[in-house]
Amino acid sequence: MEEQQKVPYVVSGKSKVAVAINAASKTGEWIKSKLGDYKQLNTKVSSQDLVTEVDKGAEQMIRKLILTYCPDDEFLGEESVGAGAAASAQAINAVKDSEYVWIVDPIDGTTNFVHGFPYYCVSIALAHKGEVIIGVIYDPSHDELFVAEKGKGAYVHGNLMKVSQEATLGESLVATGFPADRGESLRLNMSGLNAIVPKVRSIRNEGSAALHLAYVAAGRLSAYWEIGLNAWDLAAGSLLVTESGGRIGDISGEDYHLAVRNVLATNGHIHQELMTELHEAGLQHIPAQK
Image 1: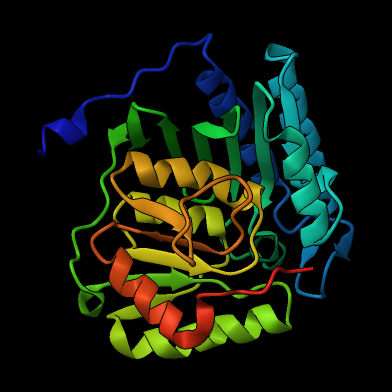
Image 2: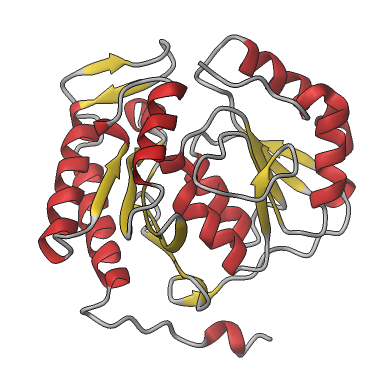
C-alpha cells in the first residue's frame, strides 16, 4: 500500500486536466501575490459573503487560460452568476446538459483571503453532460495541488490519496462551515453542530468548502457537512472525494449531482452514522434557500 501511494501522477501536456492544472496554479500564485493588497471589498447575499476585485480578476484569468485551449467549452464561474440560491440554480440548469462545462470558484475562502488567514484556494472542475470528470484544487498558501480524473484516482503532490479509516464518529475529526445566509440555514447548521460536537473527536471550520473536501479525500478529515453551498464550491472536491474512496451526496441521502447545495462528504465508513445524527438534529428536510 505504501508503495502504491508513491506512484507518480503523469499528465499529458495537451489534456484538459493539464489545462485545469495550469489555470489553477498560475491563478493561485497571482492571488497569493495580492494577499493584503485588495482595493475593493463588497458583499453579496450578506455581510459575511464577501467579494473583492481579486476574485473577479482571478475568474477572468482562469476563463482566458481555459478557453484559449478549449474554446468550444462552456464556462460557469461564481463571479459571473448573480447572488442567491435562485440565481445559482438557474445557472446550473442552463449548463447541466452541456457537452463540457468548466465550473470555477476563483477564490474559495474569500473571507480568509481578506483577513490574511492562509486557507483559501482555486477550485476548477470540468463536467461532461452533468458528470464531473476533472477536479483540480490549488492551495497557494501551502503550495498543494489536488487533482482528480474520473476513473484515474485522486492525487496530492503527485501521490495517490485515500480517505481515512475511522470507523465511528467517536474517533473522527469532522468539519463544517457556517452559511452566508444567517437565517434558517444557519439555525439548522447550528442544530447539527450542537448534536455532532459531543459525538466526535473534534470539529473544525476553516472556511473553505473546497479545501474541506480535499482534506476528506486526503484522509486529513473524516467528514464534512455544510448547508447552502453552490456547484462551484463542491464540483471539484466531489470528484476528489469519490476518487479517493469516499462518499459524497446531499445531507438528505440523495447522491451527489451539480445542483446539490446541502453537502455531506465522508470517508464512507461513518457516512450513515453521521447522516443519521444530522437527520435527528433536524437536517433531513432542509427548506430550499431563496
